[in-house]
Image (cartoon, rainbow, N blue to C red; front, side, top):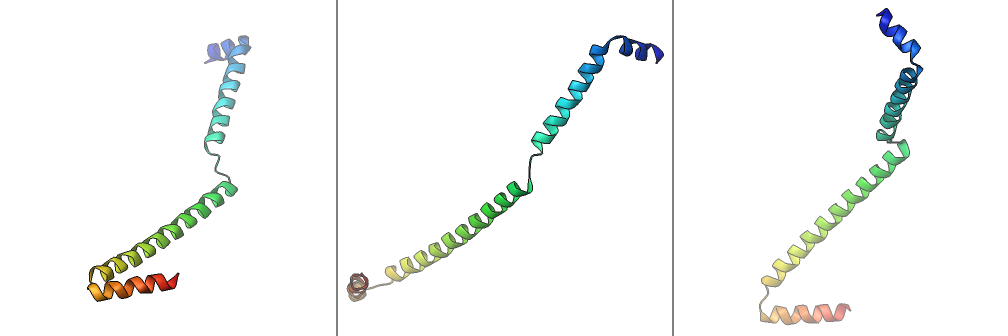
Length: 90
């Protein structure tokens, strides 16, 4: 053990290299774990917005499906009435 310590003391480049190596590792860990509270809040807001848009799309899709079923069930007279109804709404 004494020989290793003596070798390290006689070669300062080893100490400098070890310090640089440790600093590089610490910096890399800090950069990889860069999830600041502001960034987390932005991510949460985006997730909430995405979820609300998904719900809105699902709701519109169900309304569309109801309208499609309603149209499939129409006879000729009802089709003409629906046409006039759609034209009069504009």
